[in-house]
Image (cartoon, rainbow, N blue to C red):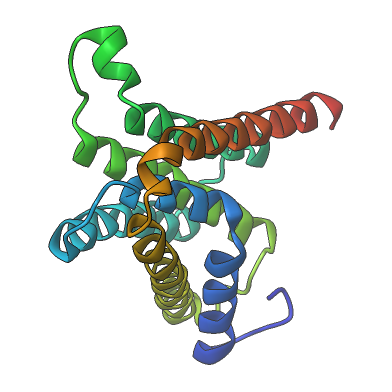
Length: 195
């Protein structure tokens, strides 16, 4: 990315798709968001809210050169996974006596995920020549990668939901997702203090 100058839509689109398709933290959050969603219109709504959030801060963050310490932002992204897993197992309802707005949470955490993307792009110190089209291409790639990841998740989930084991293991799966989020948080906090 550092050596690319001028408008290069396909390479940036590829990088965006690759980043999202291999970004396990983003995929874990996406899995948490759609875990108990069955209707395609609900899945589409939540994925769109997440995309609006991360696209906004990714584009504006790079354009205005607003970077956040990568360890801190990645720890917040890990926290988003923990939050969603807790939400899925009904912890907030039991602990607080009410259900936080899931749509608002999806947008807010999408904003943080976008800052994670922008921080990584800023670290590459890409050329300002062709910045806007390249960023838009990167964002299109991110959405393509997200749709590929979502498609894979939905295929796997649709098979799993048809089995009796889904309801027996849904709680355990969300606890495992929460543990993965805590591992992400711990790894980033350790990295912050070691660096």
